[in-house]
Image (cartoon, rainbow, N blue to C red; front, side, top):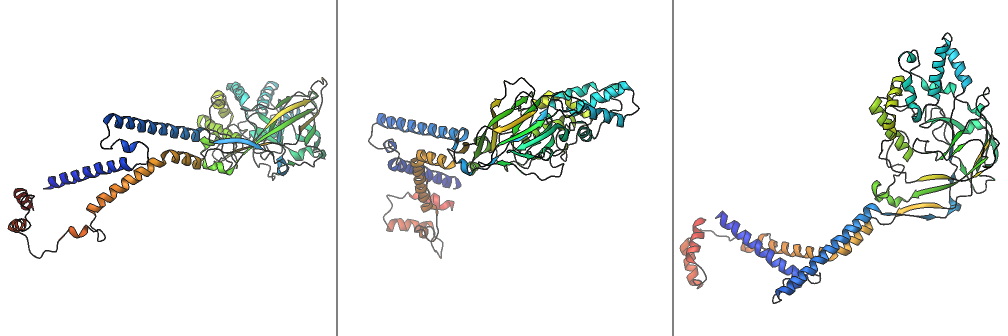
Length: 503
């Protein structure tokens, strides 16, 4: 009996699907579909319409796929914003990084105070080691590999920040005069020391500068400097000495122009290497910002990261430079259990001793060339040198001026070109008819089945599902009913008996 019920249910569903499919073809809003199952139409014509509708479906899928690809790879557009009168224009951070920041007089004094009784040959080793410490950057990490065996004996292995602070050039001896926006300022109030991947620097308008131990090590509150259209000048001018009173050699200086939230990194070249023949560096800024609407897109789609979107250990706001620094710090820690001391002090990252620096020297290229998963910030500014004034001058000069070539009149705005709404709108245009037809098809099929299986009180067929019988029915009662209603031609007595017996 159970098998019979399953067979009947299957036949009922088969009939339902066949009926509803035919109804779908007859009532579909897709042109040509109704002709596929239309009775009386020749087979070749049905086949032709089937091919046409199939090709249309394939083309629709191709269009949808191309829209999806556009949404994933090119959903933004960069345009121009020329409302320059309402802008706050920050002056760039100017990081001056001497090629040789060592004060040889200070090194000699430090050695005499720390190892007064050391022989001359040993003092030469100390001087060589401290000089490498003061010049420490990714480019000279391999230099520490030569301090092995007897040569490494009695060399300091801790407190490298304190040693560097004593032997590098000092602001008061490096700068004589400074002018910002045409007004005289205290050089050592605006220029602060900063250790970076490219070496020791003195930085103006940097939120990280202030000491050799990294961010906020000086305890000073940072104030970002801006320029205004009404300012007499948009420049920074300084007189730069050598930094060592007993050494008159004027050494080259690498000039980095970058945002206040950034730090010079080894991947980025300086805008200019000042050989003391240029009097003025005139630069132009190219600022790009992203509208809030782009947050609906993923980082991979918009190809940038909002400043509060990814939390970093190295910075309160996300920037590409900070991301690269954190990435290399993690790699260095994984390889050598420590990080170079030119990075800021962060919990969980121990500064390297001599052994750690030698380990980093062995893995230097691996650390520098690693591809870190870092994207540009959604708000970033690039500074490019527009012209150099005094390039024909062959005399050495101590004055250097860094200035805007003109007031910034253009910014770049990145905004959404093709977002979720556009994708859904385009996709809906292709799928609208198909969706309506499928909804109609399933709605009709659901009503068809519900009408036959649902026996709720609201269903008119519910009353046929059960009878309030007080006594049982015997087979002879069925035979009598067949005679009374003259159903003998339509009802098979044998099948009825078999059905009755199974219950």
